Length: 200
Image 1 (cartoon, rainbow, N blue to C red):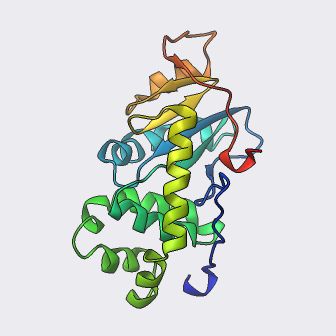
Image 2 (image 1 turned 90 degrees about the vertical axis):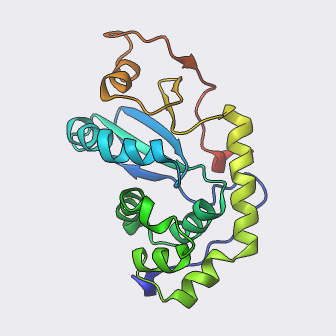
């Protein structure tokens, strides 16, 4: 895996530093946007408890796709996001899943060592990636841009069909947003969805 890692060029104009991570088919009729912090306990619970059923019923069958967007702001989460941003696209879904499954393990004073193991990197290389000041600055700018655009105050934060759930939802709650005519919800409205990387 190590030889496939690449360095991202950070931008100061709304560029999404950690690219969208899509689970499901790109042409699926329904898109579920997820903003989550890699260190958020409730986000990890969603990926452990809800995502498997969502994936089996909707993502794997082409009925919907989930687009993950990084919303980490603490030191641990930023370090993990730095490594995730440098991972090859084909590896990101698996690495994202592993980060959430092993969240309690790598969120420790030895986080660089633990993350290096997850990403199959030498500790020295992981240290270099996680201390990249340009990338860290860009991650912070990306975080603030998303927060300003969507007024995100809690994670996980989901946008489906222009409506929002800003907590760990049950599958049934997501289904109400996915099929509002069959089961109308009362969730808050969101602004029209457009990736930050497409701004301007």
